[in-house]
Length: 386
Image (cartoon, rainbow, N blue to C red; front, side, top):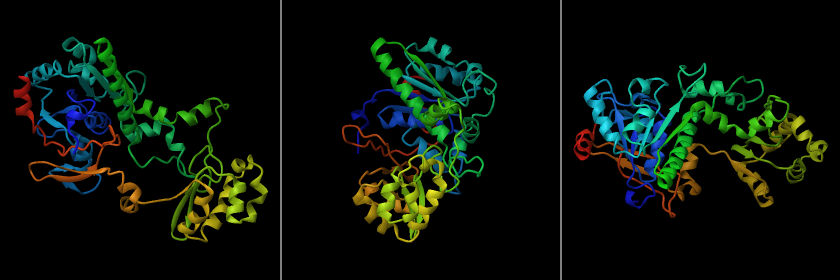
């Protein structure tokens, strides 16, 4: 078990006024690096993600997604419609290092807790704001939700096969990438404060994060006559990459094959039908569907292990496609030690992931589960004189 005092952000106090995923993901990263995160929640209901169920599983009255993204945090119940409670929050802000909020633009200003107002309370604070689409323009008041941000970002036209229509990614990638971008910005703000004593206002949005997520392919589009990408019509895995890049069905599962010269595959797989394309790299894109169908027919004849025995000694980039059961049972995953059990005094116990970052060779693990609504209100109020 790693002590929080050994971690880089030990001693910092982070106020998390955000809900759902993007802001809480950012503060989770800071907490994993040693910061103390105090979650500001509505009395009674708390963060709306407490009831955002991915399945019918709940633990201690809250959804598993809430537990996953709020493990180890403290909960302070504050009624933002109460002048007395808001004044308590202002006193806490005066002693904090970081504040993160993801209210829809305009709301935080009405509460009198926007950056300009908070800076008057605490000039050194590093303040983070996450929105759906930025703070200006025609989309400002639109719901900043992940699927909707994916829809506006263009990212849905990169997955799936040609002709499938738009395909959303199967995870809340806008929230996750916005949270990761915010964590990076907050850390930079803390560095600046350490050097100059000045605070910062760090801003990002789901849309900005999703645009950045696509920076490689967007750069190609912007400098290639703005030609839209064309997904492969068969086993598409990347809109801009040629054959054989894709996932193929073997006799007992699926095999992913990355960038590999067709001439090498022809020789290793002993597939004469690839010969017309072997020495013509241009055809690997223009004829990628035909090439991939030839490869698929050959892959289907053998097991994954048989193909690995052919490809891996020849340094062909390939991998079996694992499901979660297979991942959890693999030695490659086990050696990373990325799971941890977190617990709470009311018999809440949940197995979840741990930080993807190791510090001095050690992965931080904290034993406390996500808090109940207002669980730490009395203790925090006493400690900070609220």
